[in-house]
Image (tube, rainbow, N blue to C red; front, top):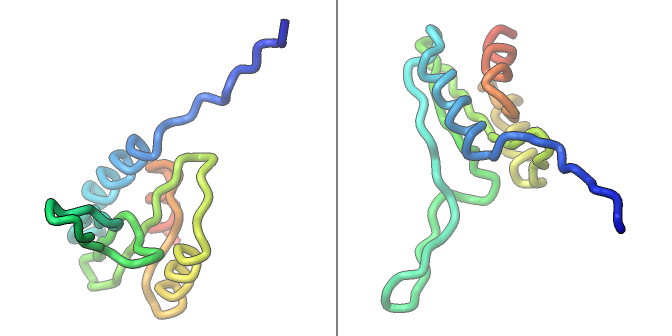
Length: 113
């Protein structure tokens, strides 16, 4: 008999996203925060509609002072793609705030820098 291997219990990405979005919405320095979907869907006629772009962050927000904030949400074991990393670096390199959030605590940490 094989030994029982327990998987590490961690939240689903959807759960992390909900908590991170809520933390941004409640943060006193944030003017607004929205979920940005990206991907594609097939139409009834058989064509495809694409939305978003490669590397598009999950959440877009703005501080009350007008600074762009973007957040790529991942579960604790999740990995970012090369496109996601490049976009986050571009935002950070041009005066915005961009980060990977694996919990709502990441929001407080990143916005207090």
